[in-house]
Each structure stands twice: as structure tokens, then as C-alpha cells.
Image 1 (cartoon, rainbow, N blue to C red):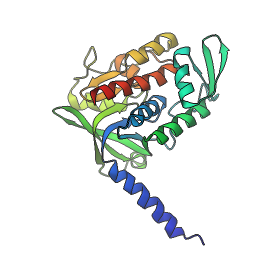
Image 2: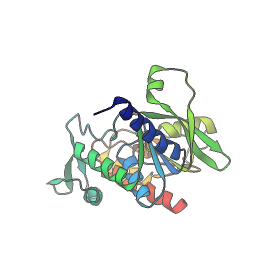
Image 3: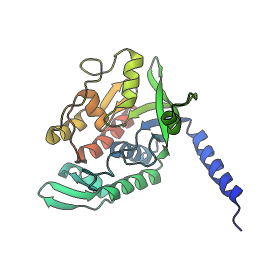
Image 4: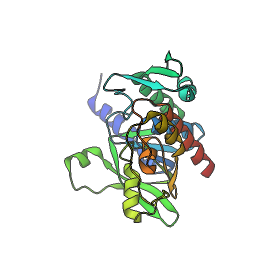
Length: 256
């Protein structure tokens, strides 16, 4: 016999047990796009307690939509090794242009990251950060539905040694820090430089170059990195995004 209340208890008890154990962690990532999932995979794989908050219903960021809702993505040769590591199938369209199914890529990234130990909490938004003398020491979260409904409900805080902004073009976490710190970012102007117009070749390179610490204990990856440091956007080519996630994980590992 199936008992509805047992189903309810199973969901609430197991979720809350894990959530309570996540209040303190090594790394918090904001955003479950390709860079955030990659970073989470490599960090969790090394044994770091890594938490990821995603405001949307499903992981993937802009990847599932491919280009103009054609669910295909392109990856350059440098990023092909990551496709291999995650078991994402692809074929060579022309020399140095590899095409993959964006839905398969999203599913493989999510699957491998979770199985490596990454804890993903969807439908949760990061609405503020915790800043102390040593830098960013955590985030303040609330349910995304609260944000959407514009309800006045107080949030709760989660503590970590490192925070990674993988929120994409809006670079939401860095915007909060810029506002709260009075413009003390580690950028040329001390503020967010802003994303430039599309230039795929330059953007793929700069996405990786711009993956770095932007405020004490706060790192940027993927399109957040380009938006913060003034790089161009690149469209539906994703090698730089994947490599950026791997690079930020390596940088954070060295700091931890």
C-alpha cells in the first residue's frame, strides 16, 4: 500500500537533513550553467564540500537552448577534452568545430557533478552576500518564488570559505559586492566593466583569462567573468565556458 504521508515525510526529512548539513561548506557556487556545473564537479571530485544554488527550476543555464532554440552547441578543440571527460558525444562538423547536443551536454554535466558530490539546490536565489574583514564569507538565500512574487520574507545565510559567481551575463553576486563594497573590485576601474558585443574568437580566450578572483574570496567564471572584466560575449560556443569552470576550480583548490 502507498501512503501519501510517508512520501511527504521522505521528501521533507531527507531534503532538510542535507540542507542543514550544507549551512557551512568549503565553496558556494551561484548558478548552474556549464561553468558552474564544471567548477562544482572538479571541486567536489577533489573532496571539497561544494554547494550550488540555482534560481531556476532546472540546471543548465543558457546551454539547453543551444543557438536560437536549436539544441546544439559548438565546442572548439581546446574544450573537447572536457566533453570526453563528461561522456558527452560530439561530431566534427568542420576542422576545429565540434557539435554536441545541448540537452545531452546539460544532462551529462549535471549527472557527473552530482555523482561527484556536488549538492545542487534549485529554485533558490542568492539575494545578498556576507562580507567580513577577510572578504566574502558566505551568501544570503531565499526561495526564487519569494523573489518572483515580491514578498517581504527574510532570507537565511550560508557560510563558506569561497564563493564563485557563475550567474552568467548578469554577474549577480559581483553586482551585490560592488554595491556593498563601494566599488572595490579587483578590476581596472574597481567596478564591473560590462560585457561587450559578440566576438566569439576573442570571447572564448578572454573567458578563460578573466576567470579569477574579483574580490577577496569571491571568484568569477564563465560569462560572469567576461561581464565583470569587460570581455565580449561569444554566443553558442561553449568550450571557453567549460574550461573556465575547470580553471576556477583549480584556482580555488590552490587557495583552499
